[in-house]
Length: 283
Image 1 (tube, rainbow, N blue to C red):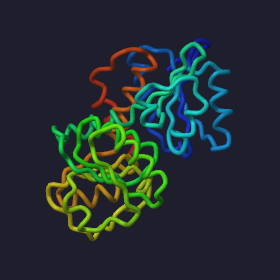
Image 2 (cartoon, rainbow, N blue to C red):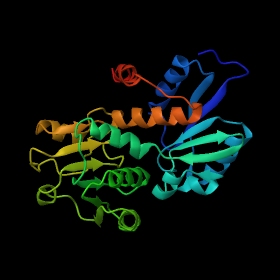
Image 3 (cartoon, rainbow, N blue to C red):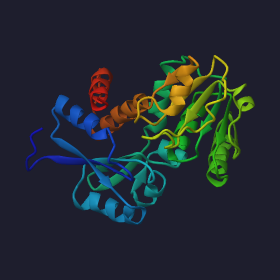
């Protein structure tokens, strides 16, 4: 990377961000497609979010990714929000279009692309999603777009889960419900796909479900956490020889889509190279 007076900044806003793999993705893409960009991460406190967005305009930042915990709150500070992101109610990608900050959401599309690699037909599937944050919103909307039969949200608090449930029920044919109780064996018996959208398991031995549960053999288990590569949830799934979707797949897919938004280009054939870079960081 040759940083000079013409280099444009792309960044990540979130908390925490120190373990993020996004710089590796986007600096690789800029080098490959010969774009004079540099990608950096910024740890932003909740109370400083408005100032961070104003700083993006002041410094003419080309664009940014947004991660936990700012995907919902950042919308109020943007000039425009893409129709899909507005429906979801969360933004993970921002483009600076000549001083106008436009919000998008590539999370759900990126996740569904990953899921389709192991499950070619999502129609009529019964889904359980753990969590009710910004990532859950985007994933639930994209799954409803694919006409899944039902989505059940499991979250410790009711408020956010109800908002997402109402969003799905009011806009799609997919049935959506929510529950605050812990997941038991019976809860998984009629579920086709289990998805963790919480940070539980991120660089820890925590698991969002009881690992003593024995699941049915057709269950597909997904985790959006990508460090470690095999979270405790995915370790549980692999021990039972279930199909799994790793968090890095979603991260790469949503990242490629974000880069296409910033640069108005079509990326091609980058997934395996980025995975190769990712696995080197784990050593």
